[in-house]
Length: 221
Image (tube, rainbow, N blue to C red):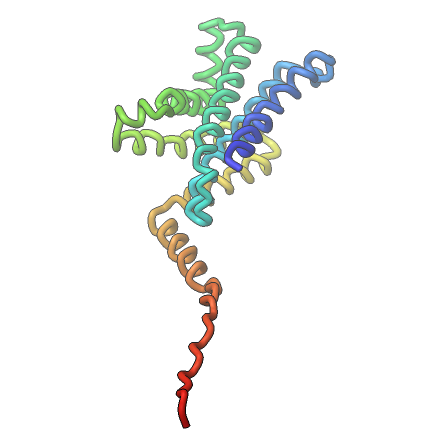
């Protein structure tokens, strides 16, 4: 099952990139192709980030161990698309021009917030390996809790980017808020208690019946 889940994550995560490349090859992107692929990569990064954040609450509720290895893969794919999103913005949109980028990042609030989120995700992606987990020890968890700060910044970036119809980014924001609540120690503890209580009420398998010993029979009257 784990192998199938891993392959499923790889295929699902790479499908949006394949779609972008196919549409670009066919010339079927929108009238503003740079804006189109910028939005596509940004939305994919957000979806994968939210899925990565959902793994721990799902494990707390259902203890499905096969899900745990997917958290890192989903997070790395989220960073991959965030990096593509950022490179398209600074490269295709602004031609890597430092002056134009400085003006864009510091004068457009959505760009500034998005840049801050990317700067947070960068060290999290770099330190996601087991080697870095050993080096950082307890500090590793503290560092990687910043992913929630990045997620909130990404939501704000999305809201300020679309400006008018903010229903979709607010929906993502609600999901992130729920995941944050589920990660709270008191809530996580309560979820574990409910899980244990549910298991305690499951019907137990009755013991195997054994034949009763035959009564002792005397040979005489």
